Figure (tube, rainbow, N blue to C red):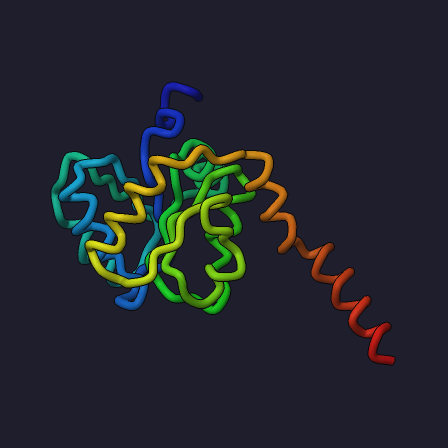
Length: 171
């Protein structure tokens, strides 16, 4: 039902199981200031804590169904990942839908997000650093096909192929 779907590229999106290290506090602080549309979906202690805050531009929607999650990714302007993750599958999921990522430049994001091509990386978990990343994001035109191709680098099939090639080289 298209009427119930969010507007195309009208909002920023963050999804996950929110615990303190996921830095939802930083995202909420920045988006309250910018007054840009933000959708937060997921669960966790921080989700429950911040869900109680009323703000016109920030919407909390709990744990979506698989179909709802597809829509949330598909219609997002950008996906946000302000935390240090070992890998960060959500950043790859977003790119697989052609959605660029604004991510903290640590951990898995350094491998999965190509700065300036599949998203924007920021170096400090501070309000100023994230504000600058969002401003920079707005100056870049992203190629949806490149985003999808980049995400495919992390598919199960590519992993298996690379793993077996590595084994063959070392036998």
